[in-house]
Amino acid sequence: MNRWKMILQNLVKLIGIVSSATVLGKIFVELGFSETNIVVMYLLAVLLVARFTQGYQYGILSAVVSLLCFNYFFTAPYHTLAVNDPSYLITFSIMLATSLVTSALTTKEKLLTKEANERGEESQILYMLSSKLSDAADMEDILKIAVESISRLIQVNVGCVYIGIREDAMHIQQVGEKQIHRNVSKPEELQRKFSNLRTEYLEDKDAYYYPVNGREKLLGVVEIDKKAPVEELHAKQKLFHSILENVSMAMERIEVTIERIRDKENMERERERANLLRAISHDLRTPLSGIMGTSEMLMDMTDKEDKRQKLLLGIYQDADWLKSLVENILSLTRLQDGKILIHKEMEAIEEVIGCAVAHVERSFPKREIQVETPEDFRLVPMDAKLIEQVITNLLDNAVKHTTIQEAITISAGYTQNNVSIAVRDEGEGLDKEEIPNLFRIFYTSEKRSSDAKRGIGLGLTICETVVKAHGGTILGRNRMDRRGAEFIFTLPLTEGEGLDV
Image (tube, rainbow, N blue to C red; front, side):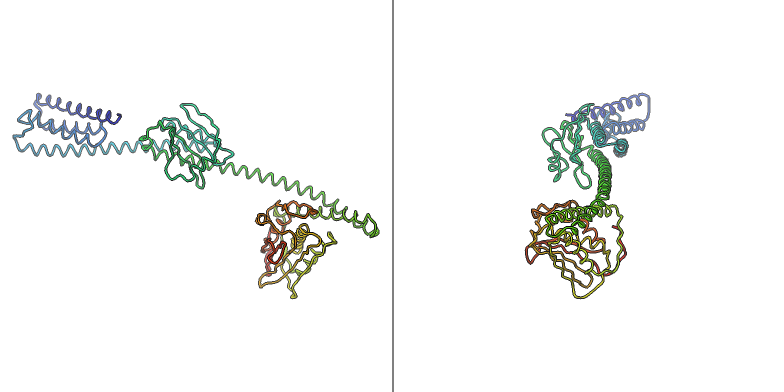
């Protein structure tokens, strides 16, 4: 209906302008003006038609109508389309060509001017939008700006949903001059619905839905009331997509800010936790050493057959276990703070293994640990104290997961470039699902002997950190030859510089 109305309006303008030119031509004849002035009048009419109508066709039609009017009203024989003087044919041809060229140039200039104005308007809209979005403090501000801008552009109700970070999902809708906040009940369904979108948009009976995509994921969805004319949406498609891109960049900026704030808060909590652990561990280490020393002295003063000997041994072992736990906590906090510097010296791996085994057997006197070392003697660059702690943690871990009847073996061997140390047991072994998490901080296995003390998941994490700082590797797996688990770590035989951990 609008199309026919526009055609009718353009035809009325054409008839009115050409009729006016004809009336003025009649006046020129009465005043004795030459035919040249009348021709110029009709050229002016063609120019005006091209200027005030839409489309090339009306300019061309006005050129033809003007020629016919000039022939009909102003050339002999009058009021007919016949031509007595052949020279008028040249005049008509020149007049028609001039009219067509004038019409085409005017129409083209008008279209170029219109396009330039539209681009200027689009640039102004995008500039204002970018300015507002850059000043947006949070995701809610971005949604408000987005729905307001798109609603003003298309003149219908518009909604915008943010689902990038699910816990922060929100929905704002522009209805007339009001903005309404709505709940996002199932953001995961929207993400699933638009993640595999193959078309530019989706639609249902009520609205069109356009995705707002980030660089790596779906950030939100813009919904436009279906009352919006499809022709207008297509006409403003480029501007609309530019708005969506600006909204997408603004959303990602806010997301980065949110993540940075959360990371900072997490780091602060982690720092406070580490400080608390460090303070508690320092305060516990001294009394635990006192308890261990006193209980060991009392055991030496008590007859071996005395029933109190077993109680004193239990006190000593529990205090030793607690002290080992405290040492692991202190080591972890130092590792996380980067305060441990590895000082490598040439050491005999057999001596380091011997010290670690002696420490474990002192804590668990009824447990026997088999030691297998190579016949050839080599010196290995290492920080002996830290490697001893690694071996102690692995042996302690093996003791916790085996019974007194199940064997524990530690062996060492050399290759061309590395020394390999393996701690093997004949205990329950490792569950397949827990193997990928063995070295994760605070991870503890649910599978253990009934009399084993529960750790807090720091020992293996410290082992991995120390071994990697030496340039080595460590792994844990089930044994291939029999029941049980094995942990194997390697250290390079070539000496390197000390590393900050």
